[in-house]
Image (cartoon, rainbow over all chains, first blue to last red):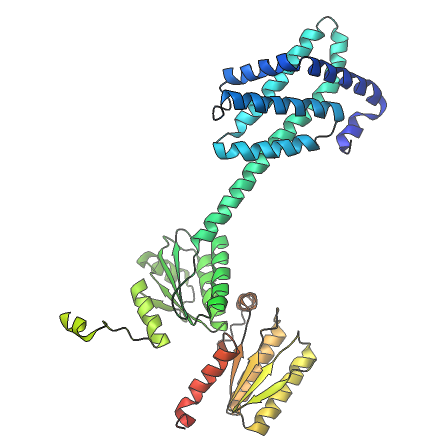
Length: 298
Length: 123
């Protein structure tokens, strides 16, 4: 009742339309078994929801059917929304596609329409009235299910993107006060921002003094991202950490110089090994080969 | 709110406790200068850990303090810049290029002591 479309379609003819819906609901409840079976059969015929077993399809079909009738009866789509969200959560991981979900709801509409035509075939005028009441509600139901499914999918996608991003910028401590940040894959604006955030937070929590950013795995860089890197270096310095960038490929080096990115103050070393050695030098570590006889063997 | 300035050996520690108004900043500058003169300090640490934002006036003033104290023979180290603040400053072009910075108070003291080292580290 809370939905504004109810008020819009209702008002003057609300009584007549409510009566018709009531009659519809009675009809759908009376023929529940037949219509449900017919629907499940049609789903199987159309090869929809192939990821689910026959039994599962029938169970879901029953729930959808009951929810459908309930929406027609009460005019409130809230319960259906919850159910659609819940259903989406369950079937999306099993690889059910949007067109399948839409397909089954449209099939149900088709099945119910046919049953209505059959029932009222003798009285075209009355059938028209019934459809006037039924169609808007059925459209809303289809909408609700589709929207919830798509929203759920989008939520899953967003979650996965987030997870990928989290994974893609690890901040690792290799020695006391020395962090490395290996970057693999394309750096875009969003990822660069996240990288900066994680790095600055990492500096704080690990009390880092030197950070080595290794971009061996980055194929290309544009000027925005390059400037962002420079800003990251500056920001790290403000927090008392010096940054060494390693693994700038010849192509990237060329691009940066051509773009005129101000890299004069950035400490760059050829490869990760060199970067870590440089960092150790700054931190005052000296690396030796260990035991003296081991050194002689070399 | 006035910023307390503590004397710690040859160094001064100014620990900012809450957001600063422009007047507070100028007050801090004057206080630091007079204390440096009185105690003949070798270094000053300004702790900005408590600041969640640092506007251009505050940054410029801090930089000014660093320049001025250098002329009196004392090194200034800004410590405790928060990650968000650091990045915001850089984006606004306030790089503090000629000012020393350190992670926190401990680091700042270590930095100053290391710089003192050669002259009176003999003891």
